[in-house]
Image 1 (cartoon, rainbow, N blue to C red):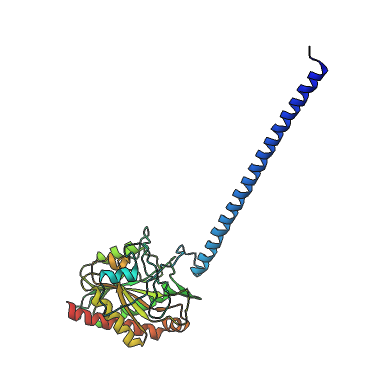
Image 2 (image 1 turned 180 degrees about the horizontal axis):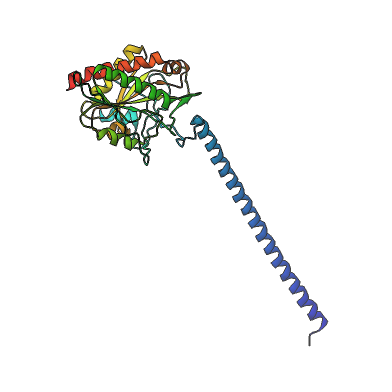
Length: 321
């Protein structure tokens, strides 16, 4: 039988143990509450980031609901006698085989955000209609035209002026100009249709004896917008590509009076690297430059671009075939 002093001892010991357990549970609860608070704050920040990115993407797509959320970074040209060694390509483009290429400073002194097609938009079917003349008296051969972007992919923009629309307007004028000169014409799209990049290359490659392929695009920069302007071309190191690119850029600049930014080779543009004929991607100007944007939206200026491209194709086909 325990004495009263022993009972007090065990009561105090049990009370101390209960207090320790209570403090441990309290610390655990506080830790879990802090962890939940941190995770909740992180989740809220992540959701706000996604929401902000979605809003930016919506406005960049011209309120068209485009899933094309990011313009492809372009590399500005630094052309010396239009001859590029492997060292030149490494200096200009960095790792030339990567899916993206980082910007370098051009002779206008600013980084560019080009709107070409280095990132592939696969999984969509394109416009398979063919625009071909049957003029047997003046059939000079088949030319393929690609109006860049389209449908949910608006490309770059300036206010309500969307690249996809300017591309198509110029492409249709080029089609008419070439048909009037006696060429047959194949178009990867002739309306506001989305066509994946691989699909564009496949469509063009499926045509017999295409003499030349021209992809129409517009350019843009994120800074120094008023000082960056002009026309440039991108192509692939394949027989005839360099000659075609040089002729197209030079003829279009001559007839429009636009600044000649030259041309360069690039390995990761799908429509030039995956096609099998001489091909060039032409950046007709900078929509980010308000003055040049106004010209590019003008029907008369678009006709001049189309005539310049057609003149280049005339010279190219006469000398190359």
